[in-house]
Image (tube, rainbow, N blue to C red; front, side, top):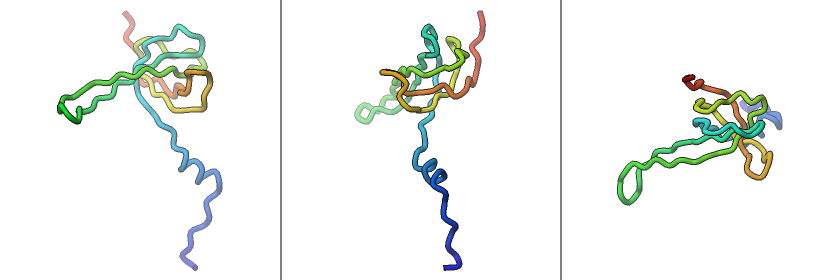
Length: 100
């Protein structure tokens, strides 16, 4: 019993069980207050036709400080439901869009 590990605290074990999904996408709309729409593109190979397919999904993300602009590359993280459609939170702006 001398080789036994010390017991983990409840918060440490809970954090490991509850890994939140993270996605990277592009902001396509920021017209709503404290909300931005992020388009995430996923590329996969079709199982039957063996062709590579781009699948686009749009997520509404909570943007507390309205920092995201259209065209920005952002990271979003899964969170608790904030409204009917909003279940993601803006984590960071990875790359700002070029201004024209």
